Amino acid sequence: MERLTEILDTIDSFIWGPFLLIPLLLGTGLWLTIRLRGIQFRKLGSALWLALIKRSDDGTEDQKHGDISQYQALTTALAATVGTGNIVGVATAISIGGPGALFWMWVTGLLGMASKYSEAFMAVRFRHRDKHGDITGGPQYYLKDAISGRFGTFLATFFSVAAAIAAFGIGNGTQANSIANNVENSFGVPLWVTGVVLVLITMAVLIGGIQSIGKVTAGLVPVMIVVYVTAAIVLLCLNVTAIPSAFAEVFRTAFTGQAAVGGFTGSVFIIALQMGTARGIFSNESGMGSAAIAAAAAKTTHPTRQGLVSMTQTFIDTIIVVTMTGLVLIVTGTWQEGRSAAATMTSKAFDVGLGVSWGHYIVTISLVLFAYSTILGWCYYGERNIEKLFGHSWVMAYRVVFSLAVFVGCTVELGLVWTFSDIANGLMALPNLIGLLICSGLIARETNYYLDHDPSLRAGKAEVDEFMAGRPGAIDAHWNRVKQTAVHR
Image (cartoon, rainbow, N blue to C red; front, top):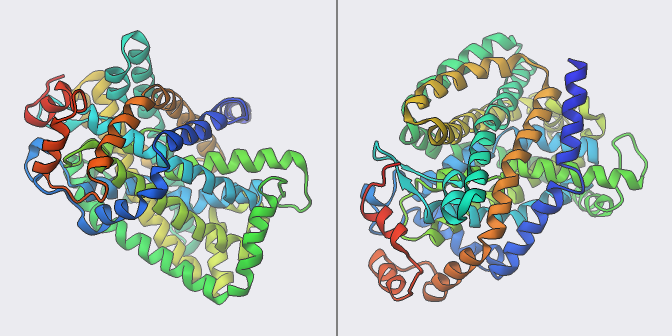
């Protein structure tokens, strides 16, 4: 086991080192931000209105335009991202990289909003209907359709394999492990008992497919986020005098680094950057291409609209939820306990910050809801890629195996699970980021044209169809075909 851990750590360090995924991830987000004219800043208000207030596009009620509403697509993606990464992942990043890691999680999130927009745009733009009539899409389709030749096929296949495997790490093992450890810590429930219960309730929902997952997450996600964020705000209000120094510590150590054991060193800066970026993408999944799979199923009149809705997911996940966790850890000082305590560090922070003995229950309950919803969302991501690789007949078998794997996640060592997840996440992100860079011209051209005609996102379906029809090549035969008929693959 020690040898396996060493090998995985070496691979992880290379993938998430300063010469591969970190510059590619941040560079892609920056490039897309420039090409899309800072879309995550100038259109955030309109995107939040469309995502959380309006919730659906006019004239998209029929199945020609999607399988689930825009809001359900958002909550399914949020369910898959607002999970262990927002509680245990943040604790791991800050305990290893210091408070400065939170800064790099912010940077990853802000730049990642442009990446999240782009991959959701592409997912809707190049989505298909399978032979059973269900809409499917994501990098496993748009990388092949938008990039001609063998290279596009290679990127799409590479992504599918990596995603199907990664689902067992980021969307299964880490979530189940964190649930089991926190439930045992708070309520004394044995790990295996939690594992059995999770397997049963997971399988019960997954059998119903995306419609079932969409209904569960639409009701669960808003409640779990509001409860956790409200509790964190109360804690911060009780410790309001420590907040300015917490922010100062984040910015002060972002480029110098600070180890949890104390002291400053230049080498720790690299660790802060690496941990902040790795845990940032683990939390919000921007650039990984995973959320695009849920976006593809949304009922929408145009790819731009769903891209903007999906973009708000990263804002909610990182700028709101991750920030709450990070500040709680810093103002209470619990981040200094080191990586070994990361699994239950946030729970202790709520006890300390609220000055009570029951604060950890809030975190445990929130984490159970966060992580369980993530398991549901990621099974859908994995099965869509299994279907692309092997066909629809393998989907139900994948759901069963995925559900049973939850038990394994509840009982294995946490550090090994996190390392495996980091590697799998990186392998998913690589082909998707390369694809987004290649397709950035297409994304920018069609996005800017749409927003020039509908800057407030208020146009109805008929109006959208009218002004898009006037642009040669803007909506090509592929997009029209997906809207009107089933495409059998």
